[in-house]
Length: 325
Image (cartoon, rainbow, N blue to C red; front, side, top):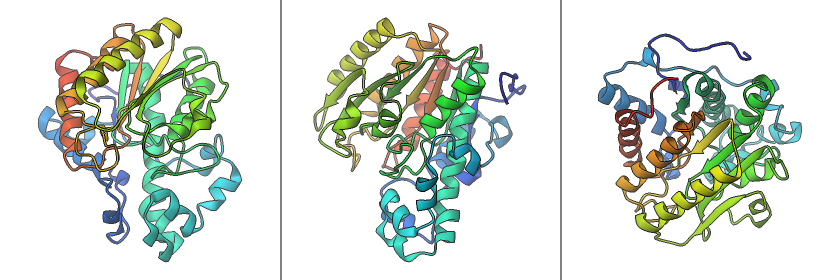
């Protein structure tokens, strides 16, 4: 699909598939990540906005050929070994599972989520915005996965838009507001002038990738237990700087909720209201400039994340930033 209009009457540009949920005989519970976060967000959105599954877009599974546009053959081949995948998923017990189970229970859902990010990119050009209820695998680059991120969906999304929507999309901006440094896309877009990266993250936690940091053009290294006032002030400063330095044709917003107070991995102290205000700042900044925004859910390791995500989406809709172009 190139520049064809893919808008479907009465649908919202929110992408979800029942195939997003990770499952492997209960072992997913050994990781703090809510393996069915997309499903839970989808259910709450249907209730809050009086929607049904037919009101959302659903992706098909990304193919090996499409993955090879970014990933090296050596890396994709490495995923056929359960031990390698166990390291990426941060679930050591996966070493003991046959690879076909790892493929069906973990990698296949991640391939669906990756395809969802790409579809959301296309939809954003038609509607002005789109949300994938998954994705945001910002620790994965072309040749290496990590941090529960097996595929480089952000890189794949941007390169697909550059290739298939080259008339409309020549420059892209990544706004990475997950609690962790987005070292995957930073490695992939090193020395790429057409991609601007803004990254705010806790500098004292994983991945501490100093080489990847050289790709960040506007960055804030946060301390443990950073609170709303400082966080939102720094975000406002960075958004002003980014808009003054770069004119993107599309914005990829990696909207991790692991910045929430109490998250076991993010170790920041942002309130639910702070997350809602963060999302509003990003959407209002770029939608007011008529720049399409693609939102990916990324990290968020508490059961309460799903409610905050839904409340934020409902607020964006109420504020008028989720209107179609």
